[in-house]
Image (cartoon, rainbow, N blue to C red; front, top):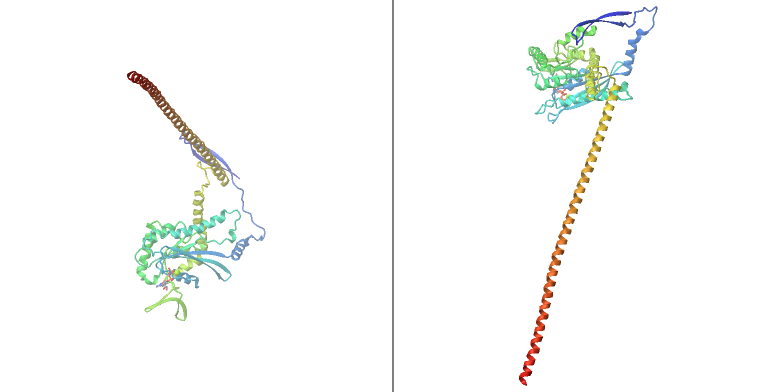
Length: 438
Ligand SMILES: Nc1nc2c(ncn2[C@@H]2O[C@H](COP(=O)(O)OP(=O)(O)OP(=O)(O)O)[C@@H](O)[C@H]2O)c(=O)[nH]1
Ligand SMILES: [Mg+2]
Protein backbone atom coordinates (compact mmCIF):
# COMPACT_ATOMS: atom_id res chain seq x y z
CA UNK A 1 0.00 0.00 0.00
CA UNK A 2 2.75 2.51 -0.77
CA UNK A 3 2.42 5.17 -3.35
CA UNK A 4 4.97 7.60 -4.70
CA UNK A 5 3.70 11.09 -5.08
CA UNK A 6 5.50 13.31 -7.50
CA UNK A 7 5.65 16.73 -6.01
CA UNK A 8 7.03 19.84 -7.60
CA UNK A 9 8.40 22.44 -5.28
CA UNK A 10 9.60 25.88 -6.19
CA UNK A 11 12.54 27.04 -4.16
CA UNK A 12 12.27 30.69 -3.22
CA UNK A 13 15.96 31.46 -2.94
CA UNK A 14 17.21 29.99 -6.19
CA UNK A 15 14.04 30.49 -8.21
CA UNK A 16 14.70 27.15 -9.79
CA UNK A 17 12.37 24.23 -9.89
CA UNK A 18 13.38 21.07 -8.07
CA UNK A 19 11.57 17.78 -7.98
CA UNK A 20 11.17 15.86 -4.75
CA UNK A 21 9.66 12.44 -4.15
CA UNK A 22 7.46 11.94 -1.12
CA UNK A 23 6.60 8.44 -0.03
CA UNK A 24 3.28 8.27 1.71
CA UNK A 25 1.59 5.31 3.30
CA UNK A 26 -2.01 5.05 2.24
CA UNK A 27 -4.40 3.99 5.00
CA UNK A 28 -5.30 0.36 4.64
CA UNK A 29 -9.06 0.16 4.16
CA UNK A 30 -10.52 -2.52 1.98
CA UNK A 31 -14.11 -3.44 1.23
CA UNK A 32 -15.09 -6.82 2.65
CA UNK A 33 -18.28 -8.71 2.09
CA UNK A 34 -20.22 -10.19 5.01
CA UNK A 35 -21.21 -13.85 4.95
CA UNK A 36 -24.46 -13.24 6.80
CA UNK A 37 -26.61 -10.68 8.64
CA UNK A 38 -24.72 -8.78 11.34
CA UNK A 39 -27.20 -6.13 12.39
CA UNK A 40 -25.54 -2.76 12.09
CA UNK A 41 -27.96 -1.91 9.32
CA UNK A 42 -30.26 -1.01 12.21
CA UNK A 43 -28.06 1.95 13.13
CA UNK A 44 -30.33 4.51 11.40
CA UNK A 45 -33.31 3.06 13.30
CA UNK A 46 -31.36 3.29 16.55
CA UNK A 47 -30.69 6.92 15.75
CA UNK A 48 -34.37 7.59 14.99
CA UNK A 49 -35.48 5.90 18.21
CA UNK A 50 -32.99 7.82 20.27
CA UNK A 51 -34.05 11.11 18.70
CA UNK A 52 -37.74 10.38 19.28
CA UNK A 53 -36.96 9.51 22.85
CA UNK A 54 -35.03 12.73 23.37
CA UNK A 55 -37.53 14.93 21.59
CA UNK A 56 -36.73 17.86 19.33
CA UNK A 57 -36.37 21.53 19.76
CA UNK A 58 -37.00 24.28 17.24
CA UNK A 59 -36.86 28.03 17.64
CA UNK A 60 -38.46 30.55 15.30
CA UNK A 61 -37.86 34.26 15.34
CA UNK A 62 -40.53 36.45 13.74
CA UNK A 63 -39.37 39.91 12.78
CA UNK A 64 -41.92 42.36 11.48
CA UNK A 65 -43.80 45.56 12.14
CA UNK A 66 -46.47 45.67 14.79
CA UNK A 67 -49.70 44.17 13.47
CA UNK A 68 -48.19 42.73 10.29
CA UNK A 69 -49.59 39.27 11.07
CA UNK A 70 -46.78 37.47 12.90
CA UNK A 71 -48.89 35.84 15.56
CA UNK A 72 -51.66 34.89 13.15
CA UNK A 73 -49.18 33.19 10.84
CA UNK A 74 -47.63 31.20 13.71
CA UNK A 75 -51.07 30.06 14.86
CA UNK A 76 -51.93 29.07 11.30
CA UNK A 77 -48.62 27.27 10.73
CA UNK A 78 -48.83 25.13 13.85
CA UNK A 79 -52.60 24.81 13.82
CA UNK A 80 -52.95 25.98 17.37
CA UNK A 81 -53.55 29.03 19.49
CA UNK A 82 -50.36 30.43 20.98
CA UNK A 83 -50.64 33.09 23.66
CA UNK A 84 -50.83 36.29 21.70
CA UNK A 85 -50.31 39.75 23.12
CA UNK A 86 -51.17 42.64 20.91
CA UNK A 87 -48.33 45.15 20.97
CA UNK A 88 -48.80 48.89 21.21
CA UNK A 89 -47.38 51.20 18.57
CA UNK A 90 -45.78 53.38 21.24
CA UNK A 91 -42.90 51.29 22.49
CA UNK A 92 -39.83 53.49 23.03
CA UNK A 93 -37.57 50.65 21.93
CA UNK A 94 -37.69 47.38 20.04
CA UNK A 95 -37.98 44.39 22.38
CA UNK A 96 -38.17 40.65 21.91
CA UNK A 97 -40.65 38.33 23.51
CA UNK A 98 -39.94 34.61 23.62
CA UNK A 99 -42.43 31.92 24.54
CA UNK A 100 -41.79 28.21 24.69
CA UNK A 101 -44.37 25.50 24.12
CA UNK A 102 -44.30 21.71 24.20
CA UNK A 103 -46.08 20.32 21.15
CA UNK A 104 -46.68 16.74 20.13
CA UNK A 105 -47.59 15.21 16.76
CA UNK A 106 -48.14 11.43 16.82
CA UNK A 107 -45.19 10.26 18.95
CA UNK A 108 -42.86 13.14 18.15
CA UNK A 109 -42.40 15.79 20.80
CA UNK A 110 -41.29 19.25 19.78
CA UNK A 111 -40.23 22.00 22.14
CA UNK A 112 -41.02 25.11 20.13
CA UNK A 113 -39.93 28.61 21.01
CA UNK A 114 -41.56 31.48 19.18
CA UNK A 115 -39.78 34.79 19.52
CA UNK A 116 -41.57 37.91 18.35
CA UNK A 117 -40.31 41.42 17.93
CA UNK A 118 -42.30 44.02 19.86
CA UNK A 119 -42.48 47.56 18.53
CA UNK A 120 -40.35 46.85 15.47
CA UNK A 121 -40.49 49.75 13.02
CA UNK A 122 -42.51 51.98 15.35
CA UNK A 123 -39.83 54.40 16.53
CA UNK A 124 -39.14 57.69 14.76
CA UNK A 125 -35.45 56.86 14.74
CA UNK A 126 -35.03 53.35 13.36
CA UNK A 127 -31.25 53.46 13.27
CA UNK A 128 -30.68 50.87 15.99
CA UNK A 129 -33.87 48.84 15.61
CA UNK A 130 -31.88 45.78 14.59
CA UNK A 131 -29.64 45.88 17.67
CA UNK A 132 -31.98 44.15 20.16
CA UNK A 133 -32.49 41.38 17.61
CA UNK A 134 -28.75 40.92 17.08
CA UNK A 135 -28.23 40.95 20.84
CA UNK A 136 -30.91 38.33 21.37
CA UNK A 137 -29.41 35.96 18.79
CA UNK A 138 -25.89 36.45 20.15
CA UNK A 139 -27.07 35.88 23.70
CA UNK A 140 -28.46 32.46 22.77
CA UNK A 141 -25.19 31.55 21.05
CA UNK A 142 -23.26 32.73 24.09
CA UNK A 143 -25.32 30.57 26.46
CA UNK A 144 -24.63 27.53 24.29
CA UNK A 145 -20.92 28.34 24.11
CA UNK A 146 -20.75 28.74 27.88
CA UNK A 147 -22.38 25.34 28.30
CA UNK A 148 -19.91 23.82 25.84
CA UNK A 149 -16.96 25.34 27.68
CA UNK A 150 -18.03 24.01 31.07
CA UNK A 151 -16.02 21.19 32.59
CA UNK A 152 -19.23 19.33 33.43
CA UNK A 153 -21.33 19.80 30.32
CA UNK A 154 -24.89 18.68 30.01
CA UNK A 155 -25.58 19.38 26.37
CA UNK A 156 -27.87 16.36 26.02
CA UNK A 157 -30.53 17.91 28.24
CA UNK A 158 -29.59 21.52 27.57
CA UNK A 159 -32.49 23.63 26.33
CA UNK A 160 -31.06 24.92 23.08
CA UNK A 161 -32.46 28.40 22.54
CA UNK A 162 -30.46 29.27 19.43
CA UNK A 163 -32.66 30.68 16.69
CA UNK A 164 -33.05 28.14 13.88
CA UNK A 165 -35.22 30.13 11.51
CA UNK A 166 -35.96 33.79 11.17
CA UNK A 167 -39.15 34.70 9.34
CA UNK A 168 -38.74 38.24 8.12
CA UNK A 169 -42.15 39.79 7.44
CA UNK A 170 -42.09 42.19 4.51
CA UNK A 171 -44.92 44.68 4.34
CA UNK A 172 -47.08 44.09 1.21
CA UNK A 173 -46.46 47.52 -0.26
CA UNK A 174 -45.87 46.17 -3.75
CA UNK A 175 -43.20 48.81 -3.99
CA UNK A 176 -39.80 47.84 -2.59
CA UNK A 177 -38.01 46.88 0.59
CA UNK A 178 -37.59 49.55 3.23
CA UNK A 179 -34.10 50.50 4.32
CA UNK A 180 -34.94 49.09 7.77
CA UNK A 181 -35.61 45.71 6.12
CA UNK A 182 -32.33 45.74 4.23
CA UNK A 183 -30.24 46.94 7.17
CA UNK A 184 -31.77 44.41 9.55
CA UNK A 185 -31.44 41.46 7.19
CA UNK A 186 -27.87 42.47 6.35
CA UNK A 187 -26.97 42.56 10.06
CA UNK A 188 -28.52 39.15 10.63
CA UNK A 189 -27.59 37.12 7.58
CA UNK A 190 -24.40 35.72 9.10
CA UNK A 191 -26.15 34.86 12.36
CA UNK A 192 -29.39 33.21 11.40
CA UNK A 193 -31.25 31.48 8.56
CA UNK A 194 -33.41 34.24 7.10
CA UNK A 195 -36.60 33.27 5.32
CA UNK A 196 -38.29 36.39 3.96
CA UNK A 197 -42.08 36.32 3.62
CA UNK A 198 -44.47 38.85 2.15
CA UNK A 199 -47.09 39.31 4.84
CA UNK A 200 -50.83 39.78 4.25
CA UNK A 201 -50.38 38.75 0.63
CA UNK A 202 -54.16 38.89 0.13
CA UNK A 203 -53.84 42.67 0.02
CA UNK A 204 -51.75 42.71 -3.13
CA UNK A 205 -52.87 41.84 -6.66
CA UNK A 206 -51.46 38.85 -8.53
CA UNK A 207 -49.51 40.80 -11.15
CA UNK A 208 -48.17 43.24 -8.56
CA UNK A 209 -47.12 40.37 -6.35
CA UNK A 210 -45.11 38.78 -9.16
CA UNK A 211 -43.23 42.03 -9.82
CA UNK A 212 -42.81 42.67 -6.09
CA UNK A 213 -41.15 39.28 -5.58
CA UNK A 214 -38.67 39.93 -8.39
CA UNK A 215 -37.93 43.39 -7.04
CA UNK A 216 -37.31 42.09 -3.52
CA UNK A 217 -34.96 39.37 -4.71
CA UNK A 218 -32.97 41.77 -6.85
CA UNK A 219 -32.71 44.25 -3.98
CA UNK A 220 -31.49 41.50 -1.66
CA UNK A 221 -28.89 40.44 -4.20
CA UNK A 222 -27.68 43.97 -4.95
CA UNK A 223 -27.32 44.66 -1.22
CA UNK A 224 -25.45 41.41 -0.65
CA UNK A 225 -28.03 39.98 1.76
CA UNK A 226 -27.69 36.21 2.05
CA UNK A 227 -31.04 34.60 2.70
CA UNK A 228 -31.50 30.93 3.55
CA UNK A 229 -31.50 28.67 0.49
CA UNK A 230 -33.30 25.34 0.72
CA UNK A 231 -30.53 22.75 0.47
CA UNK A 232 -29.89 20.75 -2.67
CA UNK A 233 -27.42 18.17 -1.34
CA UNK A 234 -30.06 15.64 -0.31
CA UNK A 235 -31.26 14.05 -3.56
CA UNK A 236 -34.65 13.14 -2.17
CA UNK A 237 -35.59 16.78 -1.69
CA UNK A 238 -33.27 18.52 -4.14
CA UNK A 239 -35.96 18.85 -6.78
CA UNK A 240 -38.67 20.33 -4.58
CA UNK A 241 -36.14 22.59 -2.87
CA UNK A 242 -34.87 23.90 -6.21
CA UNK A 243 -38.40 24.77 -7.26
CA UNK A 244 -39.15 26.38 -3.93
CA UNK A 245 -35.99 28.48 -3.97
CA UNK A 246 -37.46 30.00 -7.11
CA UNK A 247 -40.66 30.98 -5.28
CA UNK A 248 -38.92 33.04 -2.58
CA UNK A 249 -40.02 35.21 -0.88
CA UNK A 250 -43.19 33.34 -0.01
CA UNK A 251 -46.34 35.42 -0.11
CA UNK A 252 -48.36 34.33 2.90
CA UNK A 253 -51.81 34.77 4.31
CA UNK A 254 -52.67 33.84 7.86
CA UNK A 255 -56.01 33.15 9.43
CA UNK A 256 -57.44 31.13 12.25
CA UNK A 257 -60.95 31.64 10.98
CA UNK A 258 -62.69 28.68 9.34
CA UNK A 259 -64.95 29.15 6.36
CA UNK A 260 -67.10 26.56 4.61
CA UNK A 261 -65.88 26.02 1.06
CA UNK A 262 -67.73 23.36 -0.89
CA UNK A 263 -68.50 20.93 1.89
CA UNK A 264 -65.30 21.45 3.85
CA UNK A 265 -64.29 23.87 6.56
CA UNK A 266 -61.03 25.55 5.57
CA UNK A 267 -58.87 28.26 7.04
CA UNK A 268 -59.63 31.38 5.13
CA UNK A 269 -60.21 35.10 5.15
CA UNK A 270 -63.61 36.14 4.03
CA UNK A 271 -64.20 39.35 2.10
CA UNK A 272 -67.35 40.89 0.62
CA UNK A 273 -66.12 39.89 -2.83
CA UNK A 274 -64.83 36.41 -2.01
CA UNK A 275 -62.83 34.06 0.13
CA UNK A 276 -59.02 33.79 0.40
CA UNK A 277 -58.13 30.23 1.29
CA UNK A 278 -54.94 30.02 3.28
CA UNK A 279 -54.09 26.49 2.16
CA UNK A 280 -54.95 27.01 -1.47
CA UNK A 281 -51.77 27.30 -3.53
CA UNK A 282 -53.64 29.34 -6.11
CA UNK A 283 -54.32 31.94 -3.43
CA UNK A 284 -50.99 32.20 -1.62
CA UNK A 285 -47.71 30.45 -0.71
CA UNK A 286 -48.72 29.46 2.81
CA UNK A 287 -48.56 25.73 2.04
CA UNK A 288 -45.16 26.16 0.40
CA UNK A 289 -43.86 27.87 3.51
CA UNK A 290 -45.23 25.22 5.85
CA UNK A 291 -43.88 22.46 3.65
CA UNK A 292 -40.41 23.99 3.42
CA UNK A 293 -40.09 25.23 7.00
CA UNK A 294 -41.60 22.29 8.84
CA UNK A 295 -41.94 19.16 6.72
CA UNK A 296 -38.83 19.23 4.54
CA UNK A 297 -36.11 21.46 5.94
CA UNK A 298 -36.57 21.74 9.70
CA UNK A 299 -33.58 19.49 10.33
CA UNK A 300 -31.44 21.38 7.83
CA UNK A 301 -32.33 24.67 9.50
CA UNK A 302 -31.27 23.19 12.84
CA UNK A 303 -28.09 21.85 11.37
CA UNK A 304 -27.16 25.04 9.51
CA UNK A 305 -27.67 26.96 12.72
CA UNK A 306 -25.19 24.72 14.49
CA UNK A 307 -22.63 24.14 11.77
CA UNK A 308 -22.61 27.55 10.11
CA UNK A 309 -23.96 30.35 12.26
CA UNK A 310 -23.00 29.04 15.69
CA UNK A 311 -19.63 27.89 14.34
CA UNK A 312 -18.89 31.42 13.12
CA UNK A 313 -19.95 32.93 16.45
CA UNK A 314 -17.84 30.41 18.36
CA UNK A 315 -14.79 30.98 16.16
CA UNK A 316 -14.95 34.77 16.47
CA UNK A 317 -15.53 34.54 20.20
CA UNK A 318 -12.60 32.19 20.80
CA UNK A 319 -10.34 34.28 18.58
CA UNK A 320 -11.40 37.35 20.53
CA UNK A 321 -10.33 35.51 23.68
CA UNK A 322 -6.94 34.95 22.06
CA UNK A 323 -7.25 31.31 21.03
CA UNK A 324 -6.01 30.26 17.61
CA UNK A 325 -5.48 27.00 15.75
CA UNK A 326 -2.18 28.11 14.28
CA UNK A 327 0.69 30.34 15.37
CA UNK A 328 2.01 33.25 13.24
CA UNK A 329 4.16 30.77 11.30
CA UNK A 330 1.07 28.69 10.50
CA UNK A 331 2.17 25.84 12.76
CA UNK A 332 -0.70 24.23 14.60
CA UNK A 333 -1.04 25.13 18.27
CA UNK A 334 -3.18 23.30 20.78
CA UNK A 335 -5.49 24.88 23.32
CA UNK A 336 -3.05 23.70 25.98
CA UNK A 337 -0.16 25.54 24.31
CA UNK A 338 -2.17 28.73 23.92
CA UNK A 339 -3.20 28.46 27.54
CA UNK A 340 0.39 28.00 28.67
CA UNK A 341 1.54 30.90 26.51
CA UNK A 342 -1.23 33.11 27.87
CA UNK A 343 -0.37 32.08 31.42
CA UNK A 344 3.29 32.85 30.83
CA UNK A 345 2.35 36.19 29.29
CA UNK A 346 0.15 36.94 32.27
CA UNK A 347 2.85 36.05 34.78
CA UNK A 348 5.40 38.20 32.95
CA UNK A 349 2.96 41.07 32.89
CA UNK A 350 2.34 40.59 36.59
CA UNK A 351 6.08 40.61 37.26
CA UNK A 352 6.50 43.73 35.14
CA UNK A 353 3.73 45.52 37.01
CA UNK A 354 5.19 44.50 40.36
CA UNK A 355 8.61 45.83 39.35
CA UNK A 356 7.03 49.01 38.12
CA UNK A 357 5.17 49.46 41.37
CA UNK A 358 8.26 48.77 43.41
CA UNK A 359 10.20 51.35 41.42
CA UNK A 360 7.47 53.89 41.86
CA UNK A 361 7.48 53.19 45.58
CA UNK A 362 11.24 53.66 45.86
CA UNK A 363 11.01 56.83 43.83
CA UNK A 364 8.25 58.15 46.07
CA UNK A 365 10.23 57.38 49.22
CA UNK A 366 13.23 59.18 47.75
CA UNK A 367 11.11 62.16 46.86
CA UNK A 368 9.60 62.28 50.34
CA UNK A 369 13.03 62.01 51.92
CA UNK A 370 14.33 64.86 49.82
CA UNK A 371 11.28 66.90 50.72
CA UNK A 372 11.82 66.27 54.42
CA UNK A 373 15.51 67.13 54.17
CA UNK A 374 14.67 70.35 52.42
CA UNK A 375 12.17 71.23 55.13
CA UNK A 376 14.76 70.46 57.81
CA UNK A 377 17.31 72.64 56.04
CA UNK A 378 14.82 75.47 55.84
CA UNK A 379 14.00 75.16 59.51
CA UNK A 380 17.68 75.12 60.41
CA UNK A 381 18.36 78.22 58.37
CA UNK A 382 15.41 80.02 59.94
CA UNK A 383 16.70 79.02 63.36
CA UNK A 384 20.17 80.33 62.49
CA UNK A 385 18.67 83.53 61.21
CA UNK A 386 16.64 83.99 64.40
CA UNK A 387 19.72 83.24 66.51
CA UNK A 388 21.71 85.78 64.53
CA UNK A 389 19.02 88.39 64.86
CA UNK A 390 18.79 87.69 68.56
CA UNK A 391 22.56 88.09 68.98
CA UNK A 392 22.47 91.31 67.00
CA UNK A 393 19.64 92.68 69.09
CA UNK A 394 21.45 91.66 72.26
CA UNK A 395 24.61 93.45 71.07
CA UNK A 396 22.65 96.60 70.22
CA UNK A 397 20.99 96.54 73.61
CA UNK A 398 24.26 95.99 75.37
CA UNK A 399 25.80 98.90 73.47
CA UNK A 400 22.85 101.04 74.45
CA UNK A 401 23.24 99.89 78.06
CA UNK A 402 26.93 100.73 77.98
CA UNK A 403 26.27 104.18 76.51
CA UNK A 404 23.60 104.76 79.09
CA UNK A 405 25.90 103.72 81.91
CA UNK A 406 28.58 105.97 80.51
CA UNK A 407 26.07 108.80 80.40
CA UNK A 408 24.99 107.96 83.90
CA UNK A 409 28.50 107.92 85.29
CA UNK A 410 29.46 111.18 83.55
CA UNK A 411 26.29 112.70 84.91
CA UNK A 412 27.09 111.47 88.37
CA UNK A 413 30.63 112.88 88.07
CA UNK A 414 29.25 116.20 86.95
CA UNK A 415 26.73 116.10 89.72
CA UNK A 416 29.40 115.43 92.31
CA UNK A 417 31.58 118.21 90.87
CA UNK A 418 28.69 120.66 91.00
CA UNK A 419 27.85 119.66 94.55
CA UNK A 420 31.50 120.16 95.55
CA UNK A 421 31.57 123.52 93.88
CA UNK A 422 28.37 124.53 95.63
CA UNK A 423 29.73 123.46 98.96
CA UNK A 424 32.97 125.42 98.40
CA UNK A 425 30.96 128.48 97.40
CA UNK A 426 28.86 128.19 100.52
CA UNK A 427 31.93 128.07 102.84
CA UNK A 428 33.56 131.00 101.04
CA UNK A 429 30.44 133.17 101.34
CA UNK A 430 30.10 132.40 105.11
CA UNK A 431 33.70 133.60 105.78
CA UNK A 432 33.07 136.90 103.94
CA UNK A 433 29.92 137.60 106.06
CA UNK A 434 31.81 136.91 109.30
CA UNK A 435 34.62 139.22 108.19
CA UNK A 436 32.10 141.98 107.36
CA UNK A 437 30.42 141.74 110.78
CA UNK A 438 33.71 142.02 112.43
N1 LIG B 1 -55.43 40.89 5.39
C1 LIG B 1 -54.76 40.16 6.24
N2 LIG B 1 -54.82 40.44 7.55
C2 LIG B 1 -54.13 39.67 8.42
C3 LIG B 1 -53.33 38.61 7.99
N3 LIG B 1 -52.75 38.04 9.08
C4 LIG B 1 -53.18 38.73 10.15
N4 LIG B 1 -53.99 39.70 9.77
C5 LIG B 1 -54.68 40.65 10.62
O1 LIG B 1 -53.76 41.62 11.08
C6 LIG B 1 -54.04 41.98 12.43
C7 LIG B 1 -52.80 41.80 13.28
O2 LIG B 1 -52.43 40.46 13.27
P1 LIG B 1 -51.44 39.81 14.34
O3 LIG B 1 -51.20 38.42 13.93
O4 LIG B 1 -51.91 40.06 15.71
O5 LIG B 1 -50.16 40.70 14.06
P2 LIG B 1 -48.80 40.70 14.88
O6 LIG B 1 -47.73 40.97 13.91
O7 LIG B 1 -48.69 39.50 15.70
O8 LIG B 1 -48.99 41.97 15.80
P3 LIG B 1 -48.19 42.37 17.13
O9 LIG B 1 -47.80 41.11 17.82
O10 LIG B 1 -49.15 43.18 17.91
O11 LIG B 1 -47.02 43.15 16.66
C8 LIG B 1 -55.21 41.12 12.85
O12 LIG B 1 -56.38 41.86 12.72
C9 LIG B 1 -55.19 39.98 11.87
O13 LIG B 1 -56.46 39.45 11.63
C10 LIG B 1 -53.28 38.35 6.59
O14 LIG B 1 -52.59 37.46 6.13
N5 LIG B 1 -53.99 39.16 5.78
MG1 LIG C 1 -48.31 39.25 17.80
